[in-house]
Amino acid sequence: MSAKLGILVVHGMGSQGPGFASEFRNEVDRRLRQAGGLDTLVAWQPAWWSQLLEPHETALWDKLYADNDLDYIKLRQFMIHNFADALAYQRLGAAKSDYYRKIHESIREYLAQLRLALGNQDAPLIVVAHSLGSVILSNYIWDQQATKKQKRLVQGRDPFEKMETLTSFITFGSNLALFSLAHDPYTGFTFPPATLPPHLKPAAQWANFYDPDDVLGYPVGPLCPEYAGNPQIKDHPISVGGLLTSWNPLSHGDYWTDDDFTEPVAKQIANVLARIP
Image (cartoon, rainbow, N blue to C red; front, side, top):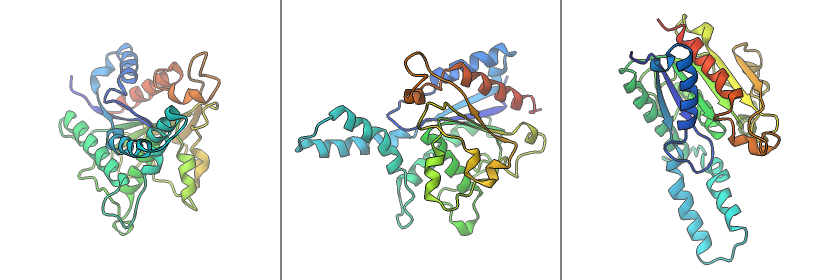
């Protein structure tokens, strides 16, 4: 049976590998299989964007460490390969190339690969994005909806790449609230997109999951009137992690396979599939 729905999975800050989403996919696929073999109707595409930054960050560390006496080596390396991602991801207006553009170009190419797996069709799309990945995709979506006068930097080449078929946006451990401080006022993008086919709009949902103990995860509803007054955008406080992480900020990395997250994700995927002819 051919896939009818595409799912793009986007990681957050930190060193990652190409298989970063494997355990999450396996867990959600298991739930979809139990729901009647729905896993066969889904095409997955992980978006591994950190590979663009890691060589740059490693080269920086090598230069800094070569001839300097530095303490807390492991902590410094952690900072460069994690929180520096957010610093490097900047839109530099005068520059012809920056990591904002490079990362968005990689997102567009991953979408192109996913579209190919869907038979080159502009099929319904679900985006699942963690942490900084939710910021990247929020910006990507906003740019696609922007007018030419607003100079979008990376233009989608078809409705799928332009996010016109975005049926669900699932964010978790999102720090979009922190990045909203760069804008006064902060203006949200339109969800669901006006271009979404009418039969899919009732199932459209932006579900934002956060653990109250996760200091990098925040609600999105309060950020702007466009989100606060939208019944299809909902914040979901949940508890993730085990005995050592569920009660503290280490919960930020524990959403991926936690039942409190994977179960509602699988249900939302099933809800969308039920709307696809």
